[in-house]
Image (cartoon, rainbow, N blue to C red; front, side, top):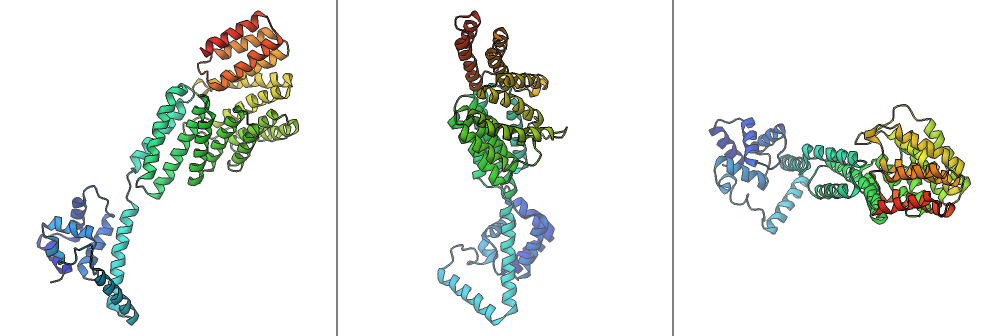
Length: 433
């Protein structure tokens, strides 16, 4: 009696139908992934029909476990040998080729039966994963929580948390997962790296910040996520500008504009990034051109704007760029009246934003820009008031300290020996301490 008949008789002796057999195969496999029920039923019928010459080692062992039989008794002494003699393999391969050449229908059916069995195994492997929906849902929640905590928690506290999750995602990417899961993992990795880029920037490490921004762009690009590529470029531009590399900031902004979705508020930010970088370079004409493009896009934005994964509305982010970035630009160009105007608008934009979504560091910079403009325009007391208000921010990151140093330099240079200049200088020293 051959093995197809043996496994059929063993099944029938227990009064099991093919559906019961499929369920018992799944139970015997335990944590191992098997194809769906209908696919298993079709495989059992093919095996028992005798049209399949061999069964894979994995399923032979499962059958032996279910029937409590020696595998060699069920399938014969040679069927279970995974390392068959090389000459035998070559002989069987030659026989198959000869049979196909002769057009023997029976042999062709055997080959097709084996191919079906292989396809069943391919399907099982395609569904093999160490990730799962629950893990992905947890990661999405973590990304949203970390992003939502960015403006509220100190960078020093949040950085190790975000880094820990970024490492975990990297481990999952290196392990078994489906193609669909891979894209989601790459997107999660990208968002976490974008957050880490900003946190490293806030902590005063532009090299690490740029490295994470580049990593974000790469993973977003691999996942085909254009918007995330653009957010990565936005981070690159800010990091480069604060590292006194405005030419690289322009390049980063243009790189992001190649990927940003049409009509997205991020396009406004990227144009504003390019415009303030041109201003930092002293290129007034280029600044005016890119600022005009940003302004036109800003005025064309719809009332409802898309949100980031943590729910942050991207509309106010465009408003911050058009006011705060422009105020800084006019300061660098020496146009203090326009700088004051845009800095006042920046302060108003921040104060109009719901408390849960306000960017405290950007708000502090808006006050410092306004203080610098007022100092140049002769309003010393007002300049001091805005400077002290900025120093009272609970989020004194590196970029805020740098802008406070700029105001301090202006006050010392324009108003040497005054009590206002001395008061602000002492406040700056206390904040750094």
